[in-house]
Image (cartoon, rainbow over all chains, first blue to last red; front, top):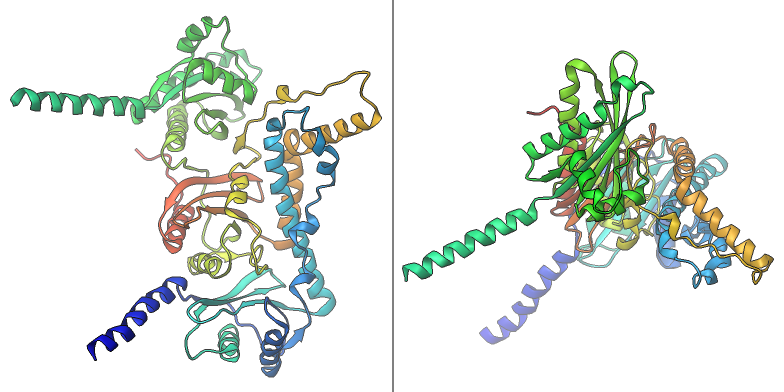
Length: 187
Length: 343
């Protein structure tokens, strides 16, 4: 009996700390609530069926959900213009490219700033053309891992809501999304 | 037995002394060129570096060599100490003098008895050039200014490579570039939001982060209007070969290389200012904070750019702890600043 108990207890004792170690701390911050009935774009990296389940929860609560995909944003590959480098790449044999280290370093920084400007322009367009007032990003993760969400007010570009929630045994997609909606609306 | 113990103690003391001697950085102070077009101030070109050297030596365990000592050493190489060096020349002089840091700069006398001093500090260990400016009053407060600059130098050569030129008050709107993503990024945002800062939704507006640990290292070097921490490039090593063997296609490629080099090295600040201006206009933020974590997320470095002045205003390395602990240390530093007038 004692042997059987130790067989049962041992994996639990091992697994629980592993689950806890995968999860980061739970945090929640809301500077101003996202009003219901407002235009939101919900970005989530998930299968279409899960996306539908998530959008349905937002629609049920009265949000004006706009159809925006993560792929509607620029990716770094789109804005990283390497044409000039392609033209000079095979000059490397004749040139000491170490002297261009600073150039490459600066080029990457400028490109990254430019990437952020492009994203800001896309978001401004979303607000002006499609009346998207808030951008909501969600990541739903399996048991023991941390699901997270954040919301950005596109009028001011302020980050107004964040939450980290460790997915528990009782959670499912609907429950986590409901929890996040409740949290971001302050209700 | 007693003899053996004595020899062990002697060995330990010698080792400790050797370690201490090795730990003391070796610093060379060159001239501070007078840019005032008034020869009456030329005497300060040597007095300033001598004063900085004395002040640094008094407050930090450092070996220093002053302009007079540099002149003597450079004579062995048939060289003279110049008032102005290009960054790559500073690296060469530093190697010839076998010092860890080579410092020079310039000053200009401003109206109402004020003086602006710019210091160039070449860091031989990192092969980086740290440049900063500081303004003070002549006559009565000149020693305070010298002391302040010496303290900035001492802070930089310390373990944390610390520099700060003002506080970033709570309530400021900051944009954060970091190599964290997802829940870790939220954890970081939480610290700053609950610490009283407003966060701009740059990087926060993406599900994934393209700034990996090795890529964010690119942001360690910052070019500012007055204060910079820069990589050193040597244009002399760029060899553009010409000859009758080269056709038009070759020259077109060379033009591309030159164009890239011009835009992203020599005129980089102009290009950077323009893009930061656009970013600031789109997002209405006050500062960009770059926080680079190591792979274990247990150690971090920071850089902060003021978007109005386009200046590097905060730099620190070796901040250790968990993500919330590192953020707490950064927030404390940002809001309290450094008192360079401390005793």
